[in-house]
Length: 249
Ligand SMILES: [Zn+2]
Image 1 (cartoon, rainbow, N blue to C red):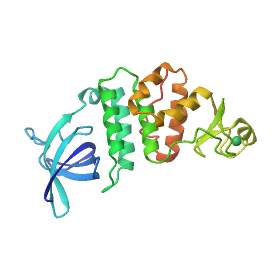
Image 2: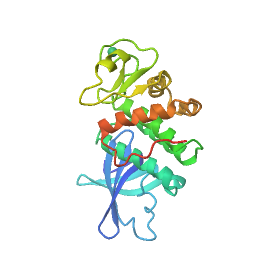
Image 3: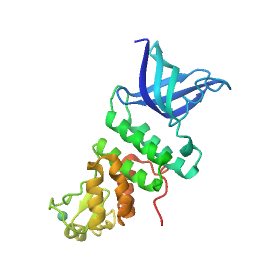
């Protein structure tokens, strides 16, 4: 296939030569695809907007000697608002960093692609706090990586949970109050307490349709759940440097 077309999102760019740029695409069917956008930094290049992070659309690529070059792009969204708002941009950049570590060549990820597009639409056009959208994105991203924290039962003794518990980011889930008490002086220090409301949010959010996250805004425990989720993501994805601040009223 010398020439092919795929829907994709630009997740990374690196300038190259005087006028060129390497871009990394996330394609739902092909996974990670690297391509050269030749001449895209020339003032009147038709590829200029296509070679920007966040741009989503139909990308037409030409393959020669196992290297792809971008021929043209039918842009469906450039997410201009989020790119021009520093606060929202920090959240979007963090998502792209997560995707950059997760998306592999020749590895389809159609559900993650759809979650990313929905999340970007909310971040760009929505009214809800970006911290809430990031929390929902993290929940779905980690589920699709097979890394959701366990929330229905104690990760140490297996006892089904109902009510308050603790959160052990190190083990990756909820710990019953009995086990937490016996673990207080370990090398990891005390595990933080978790309200039943936050635990239920962490249990349900990854299992419900992405767009339902909007209902979380009415739940007072969501910032607590988001803080615990972030500690879980940091330990597994090592993105502390890029993680945006957590929600504060
Ligand atoms: Zn236990």
